[in-house]
Length: 234
View 1 (tube, rainbow, N blue to C red):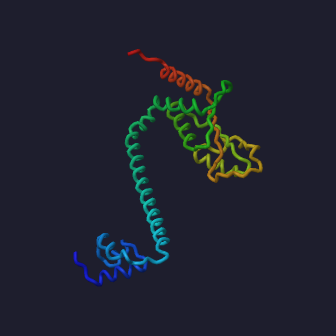
View 2: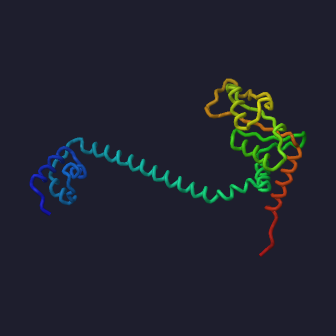
C-alpha cells in the first residue's frame, strides 16, 4: 500500500518521542499495519524513559482489564442469583403453609433453640435479625401465637449503648419495652472495645409455652427418623 512521504516522517517523529504503535496510529488518524511501522521505525532510537513508560501503560491497561473483568463477573453473578430466585420463588411461597412452616421452625429450633427440659418456656438467641424474625413469624404461622407470651433479653458487650440496642431489637420484633427483661452484659468484655460497629448484641427470645417446644422437638425427632430410616433394598 502506498503512503505519503510526510506520513512516514510524522510516524518517525512520534516514535522518537516514545509513542507506541497504537498511539502513532491514533495520532495520525489512520491504521498503518504493524509490519509497515516496523519497516519504517526499526532504526529509530527510542528515548531513555521508553521502557518505564511502556511499563506504566501496561500496568494501566492491566488495571483497566481487571476492572472490566470485575464488572463482567459481577453482572454474571447477579444474573446467576436472579436465576436462583426464579427457581426458588415458588418453593419459598410454601412457607406460608402451616405444615411446611412447622417443619422449618422445628429445624430452626433443633439448631438454635435451648435444649433445657425443665421450666415452662424455651428460647432462641441470635445476633442475626433475620433469624429472630423467622422464628417469630413461624411461631405466628404455626401456632395459636400470643405476643403476650414473648419475653426478650438483650445480651451485649460492656461498652454498648443499652437503650439503643433495645430500641433496635424492639423495631425488629415489634415487641414493646415492657416485655424486655433487664439487659445482660458480658462482664468479660469490660475494658475491651467493640470492634464491629454494626454489632447489635444477641437477642434472646423466650416463648412462655413449654408445649410448643415439646411439639417441635417431637416433630424434629420424627423427621430425623424418617431421614435415617433405610428404604427398601433394590
